[in-house]
Image (cartoon, rainbow, N blue to C red):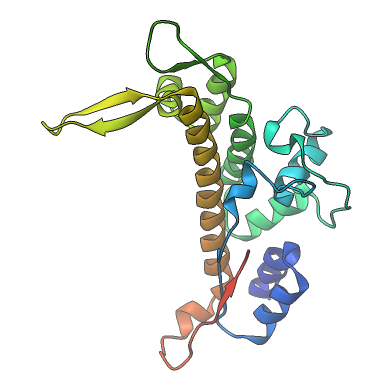
Length: 223
């Protein structure tokens, strides 16, 4: 019964087709499939970003226009779930309260990355961050040092012929591209962590009892 309740909570936000496959195919697993992670930083014109970001804005009462990654998105449809219901599903996955908060922090940090701005430094190579207060908040949410975050956004490691690593300054164009790549990568990593927890929870007690290789698992992609 507890396993079934966890399954219901986990699959509450999935599409009807995905829930159908989970019901009819035993030992089914979820995987990221062709996740369109580029949508995080640049949704196609007139389309929305991933729903979770809009749920986050709806929860805090914001229209999202302060966040460049949501500024030009079209989000006029009504969502059938709320951020609290998603948070409850995370708990159903076995996440602790602190881990649930980490998920929200990472999602917020991803959106805030789009607010980071750069400008060239006169007479020097590379760029500098013009709004360090944003980077400071992002670093705190991700649990890294502010200086490390600045370095990650404005430079890239290069290995010299002596195998020493030094940081090469980025141009403004490359800094923006790296910022967007970091945001997309964070979302992909977070997505995979949640999927792993979902698969572990969906397996429930069956994973402990069924050791036979006669029963194959089905992979269900989430796009």
